Length: 619
Image (cartoon, rainbow, N blue to C red; front, side, top):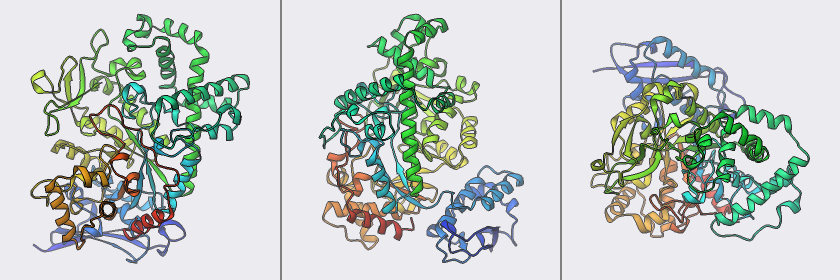
């Protein structure tokens, strides 16, 4: 069958500085898609399924696809191709000519250098920065890390959830008592002094803590410092208009959060369901009286959140000036003993006594015969839908005020989730655990409309066709993790193998839940995986180095060279660190989330090596 070509031309205002430099003004961007038929097919008549299945990128172009930039060798080629991929995703839901035309207009009008492009970045949580106070924070070392990213040619800094952590949950950022509040341990004492909130003597001398994070010591020190902030503010209020604006902007959650923490401090031990009935059931009169009696503490908690956001915004502006953007993270679930479950019990599957009827988890698999019982409450999607999914929209909107893109953890749980009876000891079906449907298309359509091109789906694990269909329908990029690419007798169809990556995705060596790549090579790689990895590299003309650090760097190179639009490397892999630097081990509740980078680790040879690798890969 003869293939006719569809040519889409978009007249673009190009030239000047930025990503479009090197293209003459008035140049046209051309996408050619081979379609069966007797002649050229107008864009409006191209069936949506064809557009959904078309990949636009020269690295994966075959007989069916070709993409061209005029002039073809212009340095703007990579950004333009990313724009084409964004354009394609805009057509995913375009079942009629009006939708297709709107997407075409969006492409033609948005080529200003601000759209997504082929880029690289580093995954490292803020807590892992070196600092003189025992934990990474938003102070000078965060700015130095931004400088490192810019010099090394990296465009993204990916962080873990910024919500509060606590010792009872192993200080995991994925187990918080608020979906909206921010972790005040990350507030920089040095910046408090620089911004005039405190005097130098208020923060005291720095502690020499070069090793892993001691959360107990850090928490006590930070509580003392933030108490000083409130004392100074109470004596001489400042930025009152800006503070009031912050409270107004965050009214959906801020009052509930501050009351919840103050109540928790007044009734230590147990959960909010153990509080006196008036507080547990949120009697308006009881809460108003408590708020009056604890007005200073409630206001101090709000001020801490305000200060965090001011420090974060300063860091974000510093990064933006250097071409660095942020990727954030949102856990799918929130804890039962949280401000959110207390403030919105109807959004969760609770019984008449406000106890959990079901908890979250995942079914048995080859890693766990009993499955995993996570223990957080599951959502009542009917109740959330009746409220227009506002809680979720506000949650993501608040996160996306701080970051540029956000990864949704355990995305498959939004399509179907594993529901475990609260009284069950395991997550096995024999104890009543079963799959239940998530919110459906109305929820995903609301997210896509509110946050176009800003969401990343964590699609690791066993992903069923219905999850894939949702991601394709709404243009959500998934994750491609190289640590999973070499298992099985036949790896040709393994979706994590670099040849099977797709442009609209994010490539990683590993994630925060994986071992470091050096640790993976040394301790976790099975004999079959080792054999497959060596055969794969030799097939590409690469003799596997015997030195594990150099072999890990080869794996880093595979991620950076992937056709995925975005490639993210854990900082531990860039530094060539072993399992001693592992951030988390799923299923092990203690001893993790503590790794910190050493002062002076960002050497110039690392900067040069990462920059050269990224430039050669077009990132």
